[in-house]
Amino acid sequence: MKEHMHNDRSTNYKKNSMSLIGAVSMGTGVMIGAGILALTGQIAELAGSLFPLAFLAAAIVTAFSAYSYVKLSNAYPSAGGIGMFLQKAYGRGTTTAVGALLMYFSMVINESLVARTFGTYSVQLFNIEPGSWIVTALAVSVLVFAFLLNISGNRMIGLFSLIMAFIKIGGIVVFAVGGLWFSGISFENITGHTSDSSITGFIAAMALAILAYKGFTTITNSGSEIVNPHRNVGRAIIISVVVCVIIYFLVAIAVASNLSISEIIASKDYALAQAAKPAFGNYGLWFTVAIAIIATISGVIASVFAVSRMLAMLTEMKLVPHRHFGMPGDIQKHTLVYTVVIAIFLTIFFDLSRIASLGAIFYIIMDIVIHWGVFRHLREEVKANATIVLTAIIFDIVILGVFLMVKAEQDITVIYAAFIGILFIIIGERIFLKNFRRETE
Image (cartoon, rainbow, N blue to C red):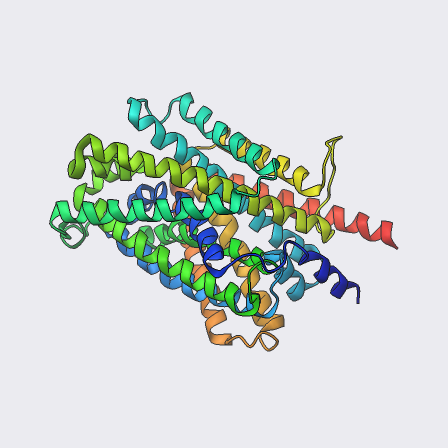
């Protein structure tokens, strides 16, 4: 009875006010924010000239992964999203809390990734080095702007995100088609040079490419708002992933057609801007940077809204501790502050590569926890195919294992940071839940 009442409360957010198109724009908005702008070069660095195929391979893995989320969303649509799914599978315990927080932190990491991408692309207009402090300052400024816009309670945020999603998707498609047209739709860089690719590098690149698709999970938080949620949440997830697969592959091919693999790696944090120069000159650079600015700003705004709401839901579910520190307003305003402060910390102290790596590790671990919960506890209730769910788990384990091996050789600091972060979450949640049970007994 209590759980039912809680579910009713968790879904009491502007009920049935979002259309299917709105949910799709939210998912694609979060994904495209940095998925293709920042990660293209990093994926190319790992996969070599076969990097466009890494996006396709990751899309296949994402399709298996999305299956569980579609089934869960159709069965349990709510504003609780991932937190609610985990609670359905594991109950209110450490596994649920840790899994939900891994998802939360992976989304905050994505905000930091998008913010730094904004800074990195913006300075391309002024010949400022990507490692300059100005990049960090710009990244922090866009996070502060997103915070101010969200905390104002502006009802135009949803409309703004929808309009920006169409603009940036259209702009990136124009970049991809124009780049391919200029290059004569040449696939020489992909088909002619495979010696720089390895199996381990390709699989590790898939981990980052999966991160580029993970924004679809934000749609699961719209279950209480979308019209006909038992059908449309799942549909929105599928449509968002399909749209991004097409866009990512077209852009990757366009970049590969206009730059050599060494040029892509050299400009890995702003590869799209660099690829626009051969095709369109300075006009192409300005156009690409403009699209990147629109994409990243709208992506940060949408992500801050979704992530802070997720943390507010976890707080209401009594899965995470909460302190207001004297701040006025409701819980969601407080979680806005926490979310942006954490994102700013990551933005200041981590570069794009490390931010992306941390996000991939956190997300894939959480993904495994979700799939195992479906397979072990919910597959009959949500009518999920056990083979598909197990395949998703195997994909995740293999990709995460290879990615950790590669990072152990290239940048062990990332693994240390991830381990410390996960350990902190586990210990913190065990202490909190243990004390909470004592207080309620």
